[in-house]
Image (tube, helix red, strand yellow):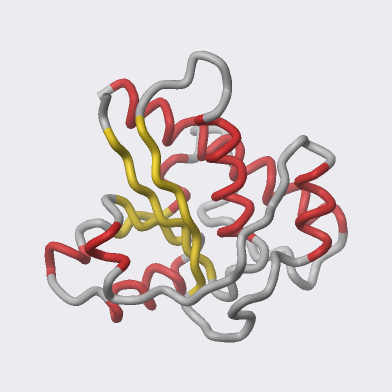
Length: 158
């Protein structure tokens, strides 16, 4: 059984990346899912270390049957040793991750979440819903569900 390790990253680790982590955990726990998985999330900033994800994101995810219980943490250099894929939600996250990557090999593990969007997606990144209303959180969950399912299929088909 192939082992996959994925770290999802956004700025504060309270909205997008813990939602991606929760969705991916949900997908790999569905009947018929294959592989061995290590899934986590982190932020490039120190703003919310130790906090639960944003209460609005937890509420919207819960309505979809996904519980977000992650405690926010910051990305570290050792994450580049611990994970095969490090996935940033937008170009600022990708840039910050590249600055943290200790080696060119580590930097090659960095990918954009948008690489896994379906061709019909109207976005080129996962927008931050923090200052948005309910629609922003629902949009992010829709984008992440699509991308995580495509990511799962790309990893299990290869």
